[in-house]
Image 1: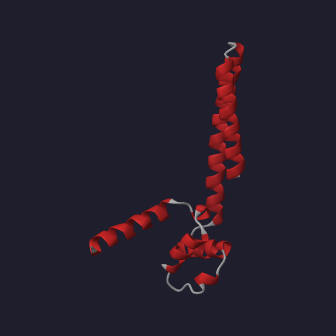
Image 2: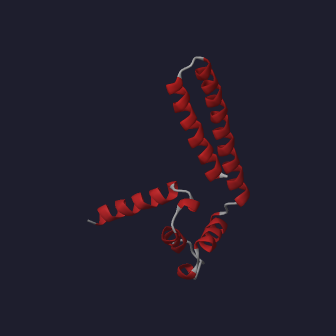
Image 3: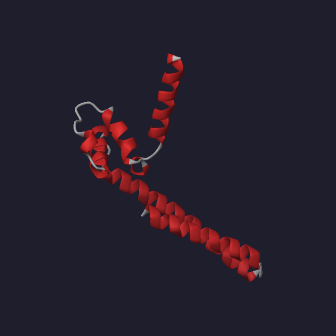
Length: 117
């Protein structure tokens, strides 16, 4: 019984570790913050305060996160450029179905770039 609960706790911690801090809910952030020593008033903190406290405790700089987001946006824009070339070729070949598929893919990627920026 005790081994099962330990495994469940470890599994929950791994899931939290995989999930980015910005995507966590305030409740999840509080659970993470409770595990940090010398941090008090966790239950009274708002999400932004929790994020700031956890980042400081873990030594995460906001500059690193900005660089990571910029890299993601650049990667998405490269994909968009490739899809636009394919779309142009499909248009030249008069393949309407492929043009529509590519148009939708491009639109989805554009939405993702706006969300991540």
